[in-house]
Amino acid sequence: MPVASARHILVKTQAEAEKLKQELARGVDFGKLARKHSLCPSGKRGGDLGEFRPGQMVKAFDDVVFKKALLTVHGPVKTRFGYHLIETIYRH
Image (cartoon, rainbow, N blue to C red; front, side):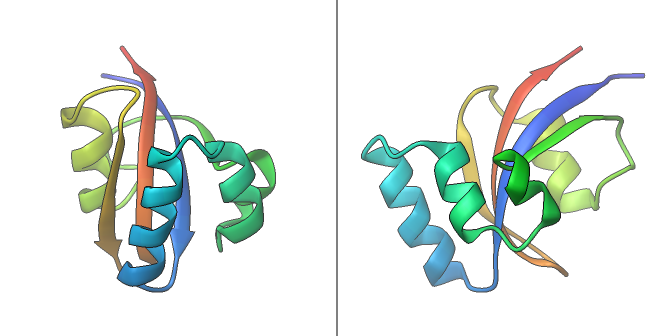
């Protein structure tokens, strides 16, 4: 079964996620933005979620992590928790 490592930034609104994505595109550090803005406890670790397997996260999140390009910020991705910007670090 595949394993992946990802980091994310969780915010309440799509507009806030879009604004943060623009900051990332300008070169602002992902970890810095996660620590400042993410509503997830992982924000304290720069958004790092560690390793996980398919099915451990909600489906919309899994679909990005296990199917989309690595080392690219994807999103905003809407889940019941809010809006995520997701970067998959690796998967194997």
